[in-house]
Length: 141
Image (cartoon, rainbow, N blue to C red):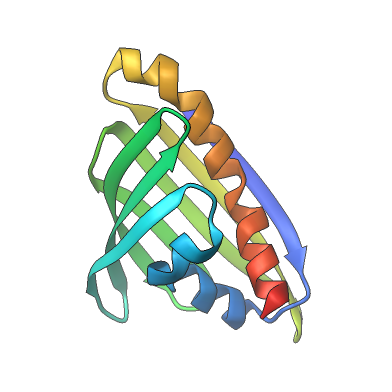
């Protein structure tokens, strides 16, 4: 199992970052390697979404169920895909009215041992770039 932990301070209100993280349909516009993003269902407390990632030899399509705690936290759990384990959490903490801290913890392991050897390092790099992608997008808005 691999784990990614990233955090950043952002000169944007936590509500802005929360909305950006949940704007899943726009991920292909700014997250490296995300080629498709589709929301399967959405409610006030949950989003089920499917992402397609292509990066080098890695091609993965997976669906997660994202439990929402508005403006504070998003917990992700695997629904289906090539992983044995995929879970994570985004946490948003206000610092001032116009800034926040964003933290991401993501744990994953591919189901197939051969795929794990080949793809876990690539997926880890992709996952590690997520916070930077969201911070860049937030600051550009």
